[in-house]
Image 1 (tube, rainbow, N blue to C red):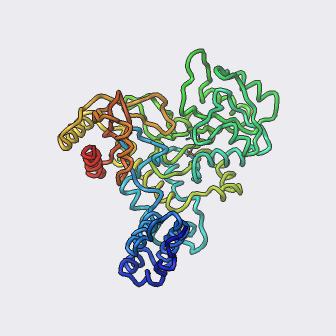
Image 2 (cartoon, rainbow, N blue to C red; image 1 turned 135 degrees about the vertical axis):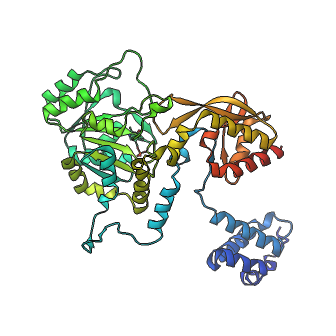
Image 3 (cartoon, rainbow, N blue to C red; image 1 turned 30 degrees about the horizontal axis):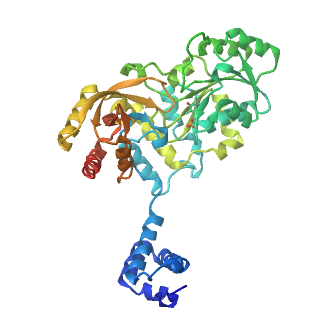
Length: 454
Ligand SMILES: *Cc1c(COP(=O)(O)O)cnc(C)c1O
């Protein structure tokens, strides 16, 4: 039984003449507004037999406005990271410095000399941007920047060892997360994997023997990044492996993962190998990420011997995995902070690592005063980003004793901007270390609303 006459539905044309539609067109443009009105009317037609009355004109317009709002909402937006995990891969890894953002804006909003040699007035190469800074900072002969570290490793293997054998220790056949598995990347690159040693122990003689037994193109060392080898274990140092590869005339590539330029041990953390050390220890090529401990944009960086880097630059895959202008601008600006010896103050990742414990507890006290509730409790912040597994920094957390912490956190994730916290000992907790100062106002408003909301 269809008591409703669909003929009574207003036409799109009629709806378009309304004041509300004019406002929608002003905000979203005519084609999208039309699509939203049509979608709304179609929806009413298909549901008509289940309706007791047709929606009013105002209701129809309201529904169309909701479609427009949902359709135009960005799927990628800022969030407030109160988890205390500094390099949080799911939350976008490294926040960028103000100077870095300025460089991105300057290059992104107009034209640039991305691939143009201004002096000669001719085509230039994007591969030279950031290279001089990287050479100066790491002491390497040459450098190349690509899209991310996974593609950097892929490029190294493809350019230096395709259809040839690459030696790697079984202790390093790791999965980094997000699908980066060293053995699979090696297979994809066309290199043939030669495993040496056992899962827990590998010796220098394992390397020597494998090199003596067959033709090898490259030896790869992969930093374990996200787990520890403990117990009955053994592994030669990079320096020792480098002595063997040098004697055999083989290149040694080191996938360092995080790529710190500064020493994490200065902040009570375990020492994470730096890029400079990796080169000094004898690695011919070192690959690392731009957005982990370097604190810059997503990028993959390879530094090392000029002859090997030249091969990488010439390989066709280099074109497929090249870095874009905004990443190159951001990387250069971030590297400049290191060159000027101001990374600890300017690069957010390092500023967070270096934040003094008193500062953190003072911030939490300020939050408690502003909210009129909460407790300050001891906690630990993590470096994250697949570096320093299990290593944490002491911090002070804001703890809120709410009846259902999980539900409370879910409500906070619905805020604008969303707030991401965690549960510890039955309380909802928030680490000031990763809450950016400029987000603090929104953070407190979000918490307050969620608390008042029941
Ligand atoms: C993180 C990591 C990668 C992947 O780097 P992306 O920049 O995420 O592509 C590769 N190798 C190691 C050892 C890592 O830690």
